[in-house]
Length: 106
Image (cartoon, rainbow, N blue to C red):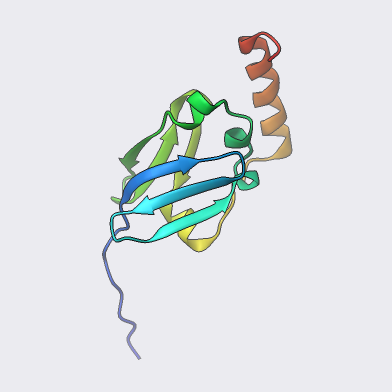
């Protein structure tokens, strides 16, 4: 039996981040919302940082959303398949400590 595949990459039109949700609006009219708790760095971000994102293509031509100031990368395919951040607790704690020292104790 053969399996048909569709080689159309989902493309990001725009991104919205609220206090509770990350919502991605796709070029094909899909809207994907996930809990912000899936991406702790975004949950700790200021409004300005949440809105400072860009999209680039990975080596396979798939869209990845990138927040440079937060060092957060989210592949669109992860959103579409329901995969939250895989950052370890230890890594997040290091990032938070470094963030606090840079921002003066927030």
